[in-house]
Length: 261
Image 1 (tube, rainbow, N blue to C red):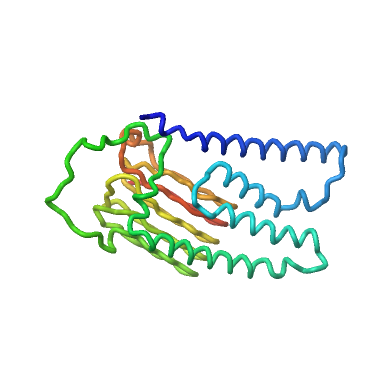
Image 2: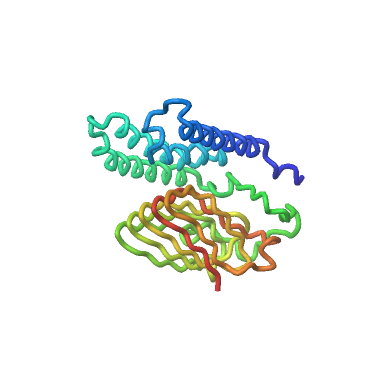
């Protein structure tokens, strides 16, 4: 059964990402040696966004559209480098905001359209070597209840800051959107039954998470001028934990900090 964790498509994605980086290195080397002529725009900063988008797509063949945003953003500014007389750059940021807005709207509608989005598309963690047997213990019927809004997280911050304490004992995921804003999430008193996904979309914003020390946190966030910092002290029960919080999405000029107390 453990063979299911080694997805051939993931291995193929790594090969494609390696090929892209190798080709980039060869082009840079030939440019330094002056053996071939390469246009100046080929070495401009928009190309970095395009390459990062291609690598992100190759490494992670999920339904996450963050790689497409990177490529479109880089392409818009690249057109400004190729055709400077057209002043295309002046339209770049407005178009980027429009694309981000539409992406957020469509992504939210997709998640709302399926009641069990987070359970239908289960994430397979390659380091998750101790999955829970399907029949290890019977499901409790003592506290049977319908899903409530408290089981899902929804935070939207524009030029503002938000602080949320998640108290649900059956947390099922949610979404965080920060545009020139920030969100602090405290999961210290929350619980989850398995793997859940929290979608994070950030533009000049940041997210801080406080999670129980025995939770696994998997970061699958496309980052541009940002990062994901797990500041927790290693806990002996993390490797065997069946509680996995998965972060997906995109962070542009933003960061995600993970802590435990």
